Amino acid sequence: MMTKIDPASVPQRTLYTGAKMPAIGMGTFGSDHAGAEEVANAVKGAIEVGYRSFDCAACYGNEAELGEVFADAIARGVVKREELFIASKAWNDMHGDGDILLACAKTLKDLKMDYLDIYYLHWPFPNYHAPHCDGDSRNPDSVPFSVDRFMRTWRQLERLVDMGLTRHIGMSSMTIPKLEAVLPLCRIKPAAIEMELHPCFQQPELFEYVRERGIQPVAFCPIGSPERPARDTDPEDVSDISLPEMKAIAAAHGVHPAIICLKWAVQRGQSPIPFATIPEFYISNLQSACEDPLTDEEMEIIKGLDRNNRLIKGQVFLWPGAKDWHDLWDEDGTITK
Image (tube, rainbow, N blue to C red):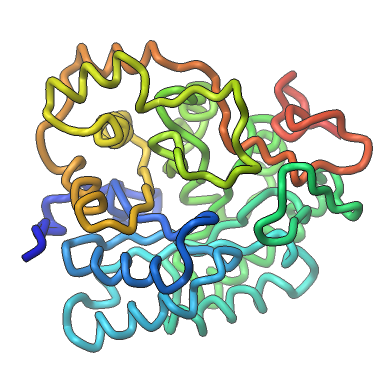
């Protein structure tokens, strides 16, 4: 019999609207190794053991399968819709005029839901790639970030809130220069922003910038994404869970270093969304937020492990004329054109 965690024991984040979201959720990106059926089976088990927050996306190619799982769990009385916090994301090929409504409608149909809890803009530009492409792939139609283009798309997301199709809207993979440009223009500000966050990539300036503005940071790749697609690997990448300091802290708590990554994330204030298909792993992921916290000393040790090691570099989204993946991240403090 699987261990069950009382959802009430999971810490909650309060969004600027007053709504609550669990401090830890489950991602549903199967990467290149888990198909839609396997992800759906994991989500089914996760609901049974106490997960209430799920991070979905149209481009993951599994929302229809997940919709069957959510509908079945609700029909069987395992969970009520209002107890779930369901996120999805509009993919980069749906930034055109009128496309966001179509994208959200399809997601709602696939997920068999009347509304989302939050709907993110997956990337801040309309550049996209074919599924399972390699790291050298480039779309000749890709373009640099444009405030005007972004805001036209954001206005569509704002209308989704007006229509009751999503309770909140959010952004993902933003930078401080981009946020400086668009936040003053938002009629409805983002309730959360998804960003890569793990011990070796802590993004302290962006993290604090977002929190100071009442926006919840949501962490993807929270354990360093050891199973990320091959296109997102680099020989110089650092493995968070292999660092001696992480191993030592894990040994002190009698857990795997991945669990220490999640404990750190929850205690720091972000909301991690780890993905796992094996029950033992997704159960321990959820438990990490509910018991045996890290000490202040351990938190300080992990704070010192930041290597500024971005794993999801996004090079497949580069536009003609861009030098390399660094151009996507405005590292000199200005929006790269």
